[in-house]
Image (cartoon, rainbow, N blue to C red; front, side, top):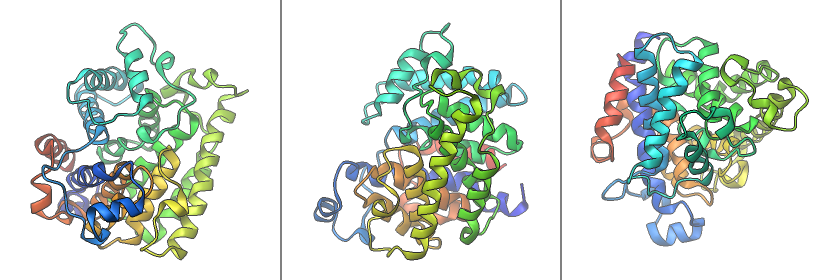
Length: 340
């Protein structure tokens, strides 16, 4: 990690941005763009709601972050050391009375199964679901310092697989964490999509057996390599659409029209990236663009906020917004830990 990364406090910036985007998109999640404009006025002037309440996107990001913190307090991050505390945090979230923010069915179903202590997590994983719940919460894995490439990729895919076991959910989570890491380390946004496409090609047939075990055998694939390649191929297809959109899409156009509505993992990643890349130096505008979409607005805006915050750091967000966000203390505690 470079000195610049520490100075800008990329982890605090990313976690704060994620929660702000989530809160901004919460009231607009199930509305089309004309309805949002009628309710909120011009999209470039959207204001953070009072109170700034978040959804399950931020709640599950914190659950993953706390599970990672526990795992890494115990030593080197590996699949067995990570699975137990993250699983326990996910189940705690499932049982919490605050879990009342329209969570996704896949997360609920998988966490219901994960609460049985002796059930293997692979038997709880929903292998046919690639909902965006897998990668709306993965940013912490791109922010935790000191992981090897293998640890980061394996951990990103494992956290997805605890609930969403579809190969595209795994690949999109891995890509999202990789993008967050690249931006935190100062990668140029203009070259980001190219770097992500190279990463996807390099990993296209790499199945992380140590982290995923026999998950692949639950789907109808002949080999683990065939299983994971299906996911990377869908991600490569959406990255191609994203690369075209960055060059041609008007900032005034709903990003979902270019890369999809974001209810599924690879589209949520691409829509969040598009909002960030359209407004690299205007992070609040990126959040507002994400929140004013016809798709899964809270998840798109929260991913845009994670990318913008990782790149620009904690000072990207005005205090008048950042100080009001729900779970502020929890977000700051994790950010300070990883920025240190």
